[in-house]
Length: 110
Image (cartoon, rainbow, N blue to C red; front, side, top):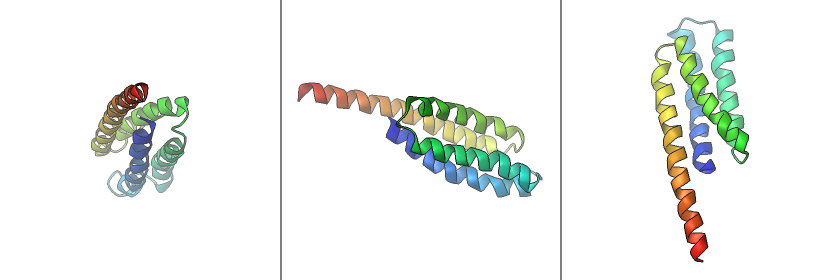
């Protein structure tokens, strides 16, 4: 499960990073605000992708998804990106748990 979640977060870094110029051009926000909000979220996603082996980082990933959705208040178009990645995160968790259960069952038979 943690591998899938790390991959989702790694792709999310790219999408969030690309949100900075969108927030500047379309949202009309200052570069400092855009870089601080979405640059910070991108940096957090990168760190969390690397730390998915820890249980707390998995839960922090949920918080990151909520923060990305909350940031869409500043740039309404970002809600689409937030919903897409929140959906990918949920799918990664569900599929990852199913995969982990199948691996555990196969390990019991061996």
